[in-house]
Amino acid sequence: MGKLKYLSHSAWLIETAGHRIAIDPFLEGNPKAPMKPTDVKADFIVVTHAHGDHLGDAIPIAKATGGTIISNFEIYNYVTNQGANAHPMHIGGSHQFPFGRVKLVPAWHGSSFPDGSYGGTPAGVVLTVEGKNIYHTGDTGLFLDMQLIGEMTPIDIFLVNIGDNFTMGIEDAVKAVELVKPKLTIPMHYQTFDVIDVDPNEFVKKVRDKGFEVELLDFGQSMDF
Image (cartoon, rainbow, N blue to C red):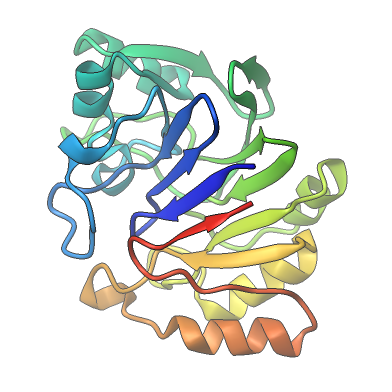
């Protein structure tokens, strides 16, 4: 059994018996974050794209813990040049890690580093951990190939952005659930900033009205899977 903890925005922590995997650990400068970067002891850190609210604290966490950052090749070059351990991947590729399998899938968004340089192609990620398939959308708009992702790898837990403006809003995110057909959906990427201050309860109701299981995790809340 594993544990999934919501760290607010698009940041998550997955714990297994032997590993801790952080995803998009944006904590410093995040007004909703329930933890500080120094509280995160991750041996792997998955980064979906280079924007500061997703790359976040990946580098200091990796350097403090000796953890490995998993991301696209451009982010790999950026973080290793700053002294962090990393493993390079790219869209469509998968790799077996000690904790499970990681596959990068498309996301319709942008990607640049804090200095404005190109951060490679943004991604979503499908992780197979403790026998469960977890699909983290990264930042993305709605796209029809989400249906193909769900068909190729049946999704147990769907972590989907709902905040609008920069990504899918509630209506598009509900359609994404219909395309992916996950066993359980959890919304993310909302209320961090005023421009993405949507009501996740509205999303929950609309997903349930479509006949799908959905759960709302508070910032800092965990669930077993």
